[in-house]
Length: 471
Ligand code: SAM
Image (tube, rainbow, N blue to C red; front, side, top):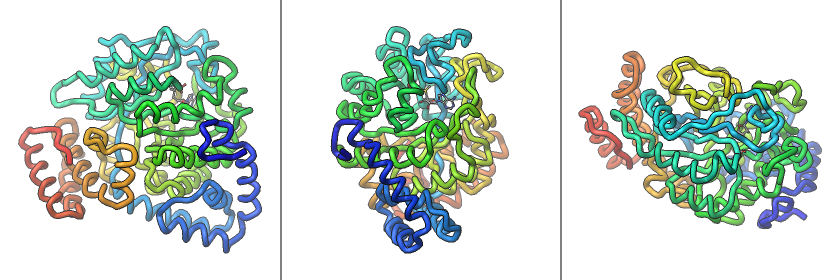
């Protein structure tokens, strides 16, 4: 029985409700009147239900799809402006006791070298990341109770936050580790993490069991109820995601939105972010063996539909995607981008990109400076902002600011100030020149005059050598 408020995975992600939703979406995919009414509701900017959004995803009327894309573009601009937040993943360890068939770190893979960073090696990685200009990381680790216990993760977070090198500093550490207990989530919260991210991989329970044949991750309910435990542990920014390619994308889309509705219904706040990874080639993993791969066009429509369904949830795209797909995805809804990623354990301190312990192939191999310049050439403002959670603007407090539009007075100054820091400390000359001009024109876009003046003053202070201002 479907119940968004239930604490049981099988009830808040209800298989029958998803099947009914897909049937309803199929029946109405060309129902112009219904689609118009759903688009009208989306225009009110309060989001859509999984049923409504599923009709839009299924819609096969070209002119309605055009409207849908135009609305996604407009909403992206209205809520996120031109800002794109940048981050990098940091792989701590590829020891893993799970058997995920799509992941090269699975326990049965005997020929991939296993590696776990020492605290000294983590410090070297962090310095390499700081030297690029990164301020935000996403920690990644396999699940291994004895090699990667929670104490190791906590110690690593402490090491990362503790490294001050030149003007560098990692100011926000997001964490992507396996589902764990409320107690462990509380420890992560106390360690000052930003978002807790956990990809569902697939919401389809039977496929989930086949794709995760062994290890603790095999337990669908334990994995699916993880965000509830994270929130009970006091983490109020959580990040959802599906690994597209494993199951039928429309099933996953409905499940993903039901998960968001569940968090909203129970905790009063939906997910902080949604990630949209697609399966990639990796050691022993051939994406063509997975029959549910989606085309770029379908992928972009998915992003647009998520944008309409959950307007206040940030959306993340990684270097799994090529430059051209990333470019198209930005205008439709993506608000966070990884840059210069290395998906191997210890990859950043190495002179050349290592591939031996790599989790998946990277499609976008550009440097951070190249990504920053490219974003500015496209008219975006690259942002290294980490202000919200450091100012206590998390969970429902963050969402409230988004809903009233007040967030624009914080995000725009913070984006410009952190970009100014990047230009001063890390950028190549052409990037800096482009950025200085951009900051001047974008300063005018801060709606509140007091905030504009404050930002202008802080920008001067940054040019004079001071760092780490936030509003
Ligand atoms: N070990 C943690 C867990 O069990 O949830 C998560 C960390 S894992 C390093 C990060 C994510 O990478 C996984 O959740 C999965 O979705 C994704 N991933 C694994 N193999 C992949 C592949 N071949 N291509 C693309 N993404 C992959």
